[in-house]
Image 1 (spheres, rainbow, N blue to C red):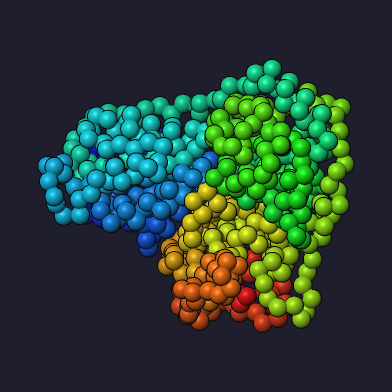
Image 2 (cartoon, rainbow, N blue to C red):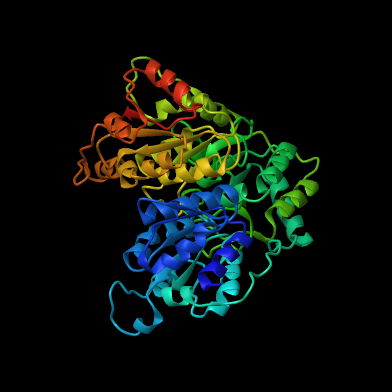
Amino acid sequence: MKASDLLVRCLEAEGVEYVFGLPGEELEDLLFSLEDSDVEFIPTRHEQGAAFMADVHGRLTGRAGVCLATLGPGASNLVTGVADAQLDKSPLVAITGQGGRERLHKESHQALDIVQMFEPVVKWNSQIAEPETVPESVRKAFKLAEYEKPGATHLEFPEDVAAEAIEAEPLSVRRRVCRPDPDRSSLDRAADLVSDAEAPLVLAGNGAVRTPAAGSLRELVERVGTPVASTYMGKGAVSDRHDASLMTLESGPDGEAAAAIERADCVLAVGYDIAEHDPKSWNPDLDTAIVHVDHEPAEVYEHYNPDVEIVADISATLRGLRERLDGVTAPSWCEDRRERIAAAASREPDPDDPFSVARSLPYLRDAMADEDVLICDVGSHKAAIAQGFRTYEPNTCIVSNGLASMGIAVPGGVAADLAVDADVVVGTGDGGFLMNAAEIETATRLGLGFTIVVFNDDDYGLISEKQREHTGEQFGTELTNPDFRSFAESFGIDGYRPETWGEVESTLREVVPGDEMALVEIPV
């Protein structure tokens, strides 16, 4: 068989269902190998869309999503989505084509040093220089991508290598590498800090919604009653219905959750990445006791210098803490804040209130089941969704907040609808939407059915908001947009533009549980 056939057999052995990407001349052998396999190749409209699809697939399933592009501009177009997966800790394997090795030592058409280009944005990457190395290269790429903390890896596959004959077999896929259990002395010290605190608080980060960590965290919170604030990417680790939930770090009127964590004297940080949210905002005076629970040591940072670091399996650590805190009840110190946060998140707008993202969220939440998935793009709407959208289950509100890439939502909706049985909603601004709106065609070609909600302000609203805060004026942010309803209909999907709050409510209740693609524009 060809080396391209062997690589695809390795993908099958890894359990890959989909490869998202664009075709290219240098991928010819690999594409025809995919045609004869159990792996479905999904042609996308842009390589960035393909990478975002692989990114979201990885976050939702825990198995590496795969994206594919040819050399040169195809590979460079992948970089943003691959970097997003890396900083959002999403397992992803990128595969790029390359010209024949006989021309790589000199300047040649479309040739770039792709391996060097990907080096800063992946956990590991390599060129497959010989057919014999295909099984080891593919196994290593998937093992490292999925190993905690997960991230992105990359393989370059030159066209002459892909065409060579080879007799070999994929490596056997073993169970994932397991992290060790925590040491007893660290558990004892952490439990003492939490039990002695007058205002303890759990900070649930990105790692708290991966693996079984959310279940173990919920059991701990149920036992001890410690209030919980999540990062944007930790939403759903503890249900926002629970009396302990303060939603996210900045939720509530006048930043109630932020005020709570600033007052906390002990923070149990579970799977927390400081790339998501600067701890300087909640530990400005360096006087908060911190217990770091994660798969990797804490980053060295003045405002995040943990008293105890437990680098071990998160679930096992939380179970060990729960046992040691049996009979301990956290002080009642922020119920009033919790009540104000919950009331603000559930308050429906008055009929005369102007349209806004925040006021739309109670209607969107009511239209969605607990297990339905919301993919949130990046822009001025992101903070409103992250802070005000009540989330009840892990991985049901997907926010890009490591790299924070605009344009992720529509491709993410494609990946989510392929990965989960629940309904999927995409929440995006007009800026991020039009960056990858062409992937609506990918969705309709695949027969998918999810809802796109476009919050339209004809502006790069987050940037203009920051400019006005700093200078009192804005520049370079204003946009013009197409008629989004007609734009949706040009793809063969239904478009809606509600004009009253009653129409917003009825439209969302109609389209979100439906089986067809739909776009709802809400001017804000």
